[in-house]
Image (cartoon, each protein chain N blue to C red):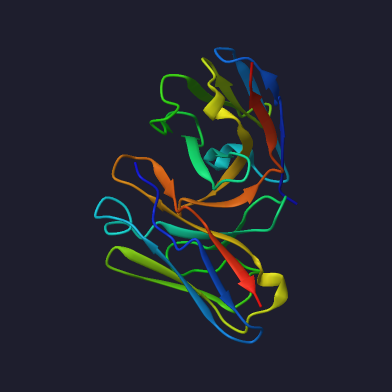
Length: 110
Length: 119
């Protein structure tokens, strides 16, 4: 199972919005809504940001939103803050009854 | 509050074995499926293996199938992963993570334990 495809890096200025894409196949994102997004700061464990394509767990800022179209899921972070600087990963369930992560995207807040 | 604490990491020679444990607290352990996820130094996350709430379903990544075995003891609130035939490419921080019910998302993670496979 190949990793989902994410851009290696994105950047934005404080207050701006950025979108991170996550492209899969007909065997994962294209067929399931079990897409989730995680934030990881250096040296820390990942944190769940989004589950089931677009749902936020309680406690996650509404500056984080997500969607899916076809084989591509997207995470949008609005009103960028310095603490948003981190690595972001998407993940999907697959038809092989496995899960696959994206390669990860490093967000830099300029 | 939900807590997951991994243990058992260390240095092991190629071909060797290691067993990781993840002790859970703050929730009804038997109600949630669990996963192991790993992260090689400086690299991204890789899903490793899954076990259902009562242990009747187990799935694994191709990279570890036949070498790693996940199990759980719901009476002890503990998740395990037996790792055999270890390779240098298995070197990583290993995280246990709780599966959020009905969503296949990982809503709580441990702090991770480092496994280094080296001669």
